[in-house]
Image (tube, rainbow, N blue to C red; front, side, top):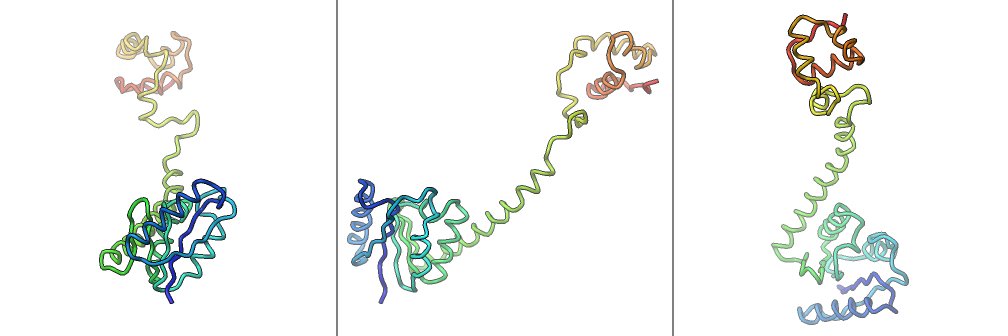
Amino acid sequence: MATNYGYIDVPATTPEHYAQHYGILAFATNNGLGPVHFVNESASPPVPGTSPVLAGMVAELLPEDTMFVMTFPPLGKTTVEILNVLSDLSRRGVRVYVVNSGFRLDDNAEAHVVGTACSLIAQVETELVTRRPALKSTQEPPAEGQPTHSLRRTRKSRLDEKAGEIQSLLASGTTVAEVARLLSVNRQTLKDWCESRLLSKVQPLG
């Protein structure tokens, strides 16, 4: 025989418990869904979606059973976990109602579409989460002392104040090494600065 289960993620002694209890009960009554068997936590899970009580209840739900929760967070720590739980329950023929949002995952055609969407979104989210570390590694900034051309172009330098003088000296045929000596700067630093500012062609360091 199908059973309605209401999950409450706070202890029975808290005001929030009574709010969830009567919220679920009123929802079930107003929608003609019958009596509700409540499953309560003896202590609030430190992280939403980590309760062994909830996990045990979800595992034991049978086709045609119904599960009520007040909000989505108790179903998982992340969006992916919540979607996976909803997708799993939908495949097993378990109806789910999230009272505060009015979300329904039951036996109508629209709910089947929602269940399929949950499965697809969960798969996409999982793949994206898997790819993020790899994408991050390819986007890591270059090691110190090896800036990219674009970074060099935007980084401010004390040489910017002498840009006109430097360009004039280079245009007159003065080598980078000689300009560096005149300005008391490192030759490679000056060469990198010239390239980053897209000045006229820079001569060899020598």
